[in-house]
Image (cartoon, rainbow, N blue to C red):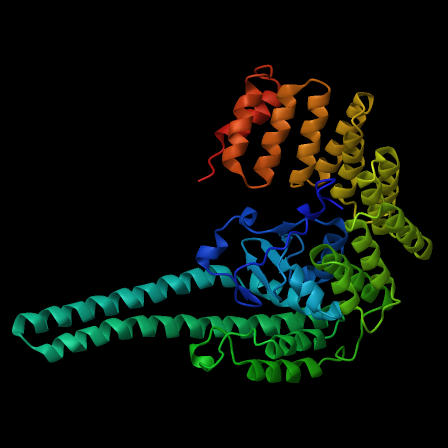
Length: 460
């Protein structure tokens, strides 16, 4: 579990995003925001699961080599959106989807937006809509001015109407465009699902969930003033197309369904505790996922002995599951047993087929918490090994800085701190620590040059 060891809520903080359009590309302004402004979740298990979901879909869309990054956002809203080359998935989308196929449908829809270049065209459409509003505004102002000069009150009123009308025309033009892109993304999603031998039923079911929860745009205003088609209209169209596929009746494998439920259990346990886990799995309280959530909740409650007993039972049930070993490492770290924790993380890393850098770094992080100066060089090597495959792991840099500090390499400690801030999106702080690091490092050395790169990079 990649969190501040001893600060349990560092990864799953209870922050809810402001509402974004469900299952839609974000607009031009939102697309420019850095991901650091969002409550990002880093978790090796969930990231590996979502990556497995997305991989065949990206290949079907011709985007497997496009460097698409999937980012987990800690929000309980059922939402997903795209910005740049990133797909953002709310943790709420994972917990709300009862089957892998439902979440896979969401991913397929977002990949449809990426493959269709909808963000770029949306920006162009926004510019066009703005131009319509400006032209109409100028016309309205001209009529109003002419009317005022002639003392014609009716002309002034007509000018005001044109001003308002121009804005309405621009809005309707933009919303009509967005509705068309949503429909295109729906159809693309079904194409990718069919090409990968998967059912489109999950996407239909997701929209039904949104409909029941009143999460669609267009409540009360009709599809004409909504950025999305009306729910039932959209669901009916999707249902008809999805049922035409020979794969419609296919179901998720039992193994994948279990992985999905384990991810749901983890999210709910960290965000909402044992009671929420019990409610989520009320229909199957003896499932592996229910026990997993209970073990995590027991750990968070501070009962290390009981949590270890429950986790060891999970390991006995699935000896090759890396995430149960990772949980064991988390418990042992917080219990003040860093050497045993490092061994558990090491077993997890060996079992992990995704090659997560988070797990690799956690081995070294456990050694840092032990505080033994003789172990710091090994800890540095292990953390750097993890960072080589996942350089965006900002938490690992904090432990790297601690390790350097404990062996007296203050300059490199401050450089690691700068790198951590940089990858966490806190660019101003990164530059401050990079300047401090340079004052203690040998000019021209690799570390000094790394600090220089941070200082000189334009972040406007």
